[in-house]
Picture 1: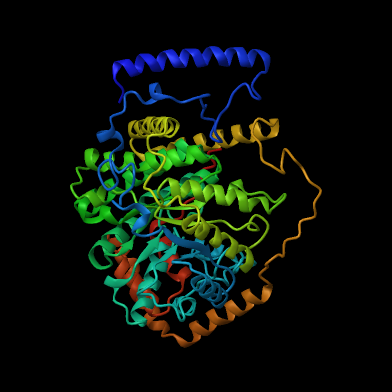
Picture 2 (picture 1 turned 90 degrees about the vertical axis):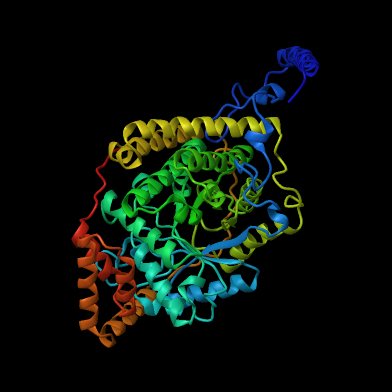
Length: 559
């Protein structure tokens, strides 16, 4: 990158600067002895050409749309199309969420993203004893196809892409979506969206379980195979680092565990289904956290693309460039928000969103200022959406592709992030893969240790959270609380019972028996799921088949 003369001059200038630094700090010491990122990655006082001297532009950085895709998949960046403004939303009943969705679409939201309540996430009906009191509290309640049809009332499913944050019952919710689209006259070949459908990260971090790891991964491979054959515009998995980071991981751990999860899925699909990697890899997608440490997050997202491109080409012999693309959604960090001085959360979210954009995200959710306290209000959600629109339309950061490329600091951090991630990936390879590593408790313990270390730093004041351990205020929190009252649960149970009374229960029983036999024979479950939801089988009735055939998983209590 530099000729010999330049290197010699650079070295002389650096030595002169270092001498001046020593004189300056002798008179006035640095504010801190050690400077580090949120993840505790030590940061140098200055980055210079020496820090990236071994980099080759063509092979390590390159141009957008060219291997190793460090600078993005699209040759025109955001000039051709902004990232998708995809606000995560869902609360109460299907009618409640439908109203919020229409508000978001009218305000400029470009895609839908669905939050489900806890019973739905766990595969239980609203009237289950395990579900009582949770209906609609952290997302929308969906028990049967009737609810999903209500959820999408007035929304053209052939024109709007939808993300569904669902994991153990992903096959069921996706089957309902397919059935609802057909009711609207939209063929499966035309619907677009994403199911999260990432069980490995559940065992690692989020902890919504149903079946053990092996059958859980099998169900995921079923969805990937079905999507590749019949729903070509759908992303059948969103391999998710977001929840790994929310559980307390470092940026490098989030990167490594997420990508190694993705590799595990690729290996299972190839081995179990016999698909060639290029038949399904272009529809794999990812989901990352945008935390508050600005440059660390940008470096992490850039490194993610380069690692995935290398893995797909070199490990799995992918030939299609789209198989090497890492396409990802980003959400700003919920764990960075504070109940204290909640209006500060607008600033945090804006900075995190900017990092996601400079890191090249394909879609983005911005958190609302009040969601650490309650379900987001319409007003708070609109501010969060406007934050994205201001970044896109006013700041100019979308004018140029990957504008931080070539920064000594950003490139050095990107390299460091990749190096640390590969170290973890290779360690997991030695353990026999991610399922084996999870069974040994390796990623869980690494995250636990990182979370504990960060909390110790917060408690000691080594890391700062404004309003929490510095710059306190006795200001009264004046935030209107959006709450879900008990009538939502009563009305949801009434709707569920009405469906049970009016459906053909003999057909339901036959569909559930057919599904059980398909599970036992090792057939792809998706056609059977679709038939079951069309007969108005409930989410719990279908998931109970999985629990009966495959067994239930219990966390071994690694900690």
